[in-house]
Image 1 (cartoon, rainbow, N blue to C red):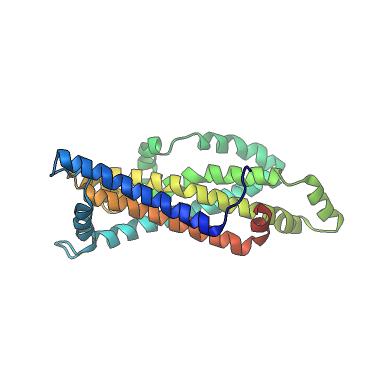
Image 2 (tube, rainbow, N blue to C red; image 1 turned 90 degrees about the vertical axis):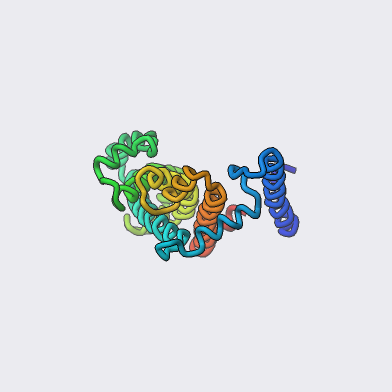
Length: 267
């Protein structure tokens, strides 16, 4: 049957098998490439990847460890940008969904900003914010605000009007309706939207770091790519993927704790 659930054991086994297939596939492609050119560095062997890991985990000539330095810089920029985007995205979405005049006023610019490709607008961010921390934060925030705002707005519109009418009939104030009815219905969907925005936010940040960064994952990937040190580039990409997965897991855990009704309804 369609969408029939499977046991956790079978699910874990299939997940592990899919990862194993990826590793086997990469090993085979790397082996074939090194048969053609033993000195190839574009698809490094596992030994070459281990050598690359030593480069960014051990201190360089200046005594700095690339991985620690780049992780701190990228995480700081990403955290600030996503936090700002979450705040403004939620406030704007709630305003659009709850107040009709604000809906008419905010919907056109939000719809317009949602269609702007952030990576193509890099020059605009350079002009308005320079090339410092403010530029990275603004690019991430403006990149995810429209999506988050529209998600909240549509979630509010999906709330049955009878539910809101019943709350008013029982004597609830405007604030109580907004918090007890609207907020609790919107929150789990908003968390899902934040999870989906993690990937685009990382793309925006890496693109900016590759252009003007002097530290961070994007900067290091650009620098090592020019030197054809793909044994450093690939592990860095893996770390980025793991970082995004960790953020997604934390948000799912948060959702399960503060929105148990949504988890129960989705099962």
